[in-house]
Image 1: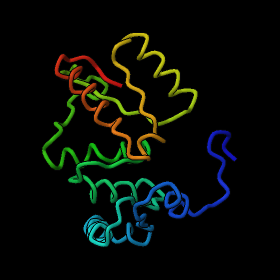
Image 2 (image 1 turned 30 degrees about the horizontal axis):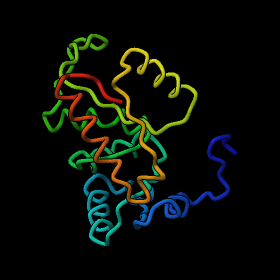
Image 3 (image 1 turned 120 degrees about the vertical axis):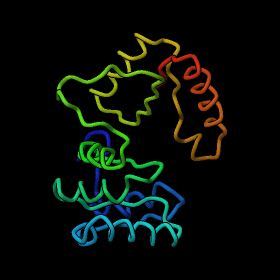
Image 4 (image 1 turned 180 degrees about the horizontal axis):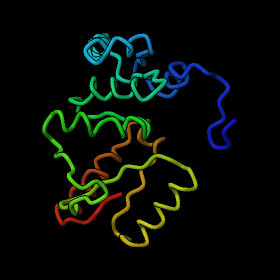
Length: 172
């Protein structure tokens, strides 16, 4: 009974299916235990069936490693912080990320930055407020209900982001 998102249904495929007109699928743990190639094949088969959203049933870090391996080449992947921790090893395998010789000492970041936040947690709201205090012209609020109704708000958001990113202004 989370205060912002109370749950009465433990089947997340059903829960997400009620929130989108697109098919929702499942990559259960039995799929993940067969490894990255099998998981990638399963995800491809779901995509061929028109499934656009997939709930992945990971239990431990090994499952997240398999999931990272299976999804590393996909253009957009979302997930919790555990998946975020597993992806850098796959980025290194792809040659996209160098090995860090001195952990804890990263090279300064360069280039543009865009953050997409969908959380309503207190911590996230505080981070958003901090960002907007430092970058008052860098925030754009999307209305998910307007977006779901087919509103062209995403065009406005894209124009907003592209204009600022071309000037190296961080965008939230």
